[in-house]
Image (cartoon, rainbow, N blue to C red):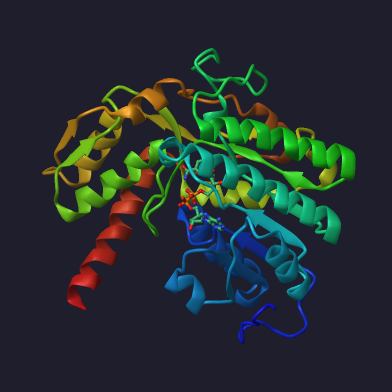
Length: 332
Ligand SMILES: NC(=O)c1ccc[n+]([C@@H]2O[C@H](COP(=O)([O-])OP(=O)(O)OC[C@H]3O[C@@H](n4cnc5c(N)ncnc54)[C@H](O)[C@@H]3O)[C@@H](O)[C@H]2O)c1
């Protein structure tokens, strides 16, 4: 039985959205922006972990994406027409529990695709990742179409997931859309165990006045994206006409690329006392097999992908916003 959240209207509007994994790094930002766009009550945030901010500002339901029955009940009850399926275990954490990572990433997606088919949900967004690429893919300007030989369970699950998305689209007409995100950098929530999350951790150390030990080597270059661009990419692909989406596996999307040293240098421009050391661990080995930049011309041509933010803006924006957060928490 579904417990109705009081803030949600009895009659749902035609654009009622469900977000899974909403308490995570991307989910918090996506839900915030979708609620700004469509109205707080139109966007149902779900997760197995609570987020007070999400709960206070709109409907929130507990949902384990491995529980297909509850997923169906929520979709029917709230008359959901679009799903953003974000719940997953990311690269570094996936290596610590490979069977859970496989089960969650695969069965969660299959539950969402199958329920979308059964209940005729209009559109599904599911993020893929640069972890689909392996050491044999060209590292610079990695093309859209290359052999995918991932080295992590996370990457394997995302390659398989891309093919399941294409299959459900081809066989059942499920309008599922996917992009291969690079490392995402935001400040509204703590990162959830990805390899590129070092960049987010670095900002938290810098703001707290603490030295940072980078698990990724100083010259390991990776493609990255500011969270505002990540939200825009999801929104843009979901709002393109269906015939614009020619690729039903996952689109490459790029924004910027940098090394830990370049990021640290940019932070030092604003916080000169910031200190960094490099002690590469297994995350550097994962990163060594990933692209350092992406050819995203297909996304640009098909649905108008056009990132807005570069390194300099991102660094100053995050430091300004995080400084506000920390100074107001010290005052309270
Ligand atoms: N963060 C990145 O750099 C990045 C890059 C590429 C792709 N992505 C993709 O974006 C999506 C979101 O990533 P994120 O960074 O927000 O991850 P995150 O780890 O911060 O958040 C994942 C969320 O999923 C939830 N979750 C875990 N198990 C669940 C379950 N059984 N049922 C429901 N929810 C569950 C967690 O509680 C968490 O809130 C993922 O699919 C990820 O693969 C992220």
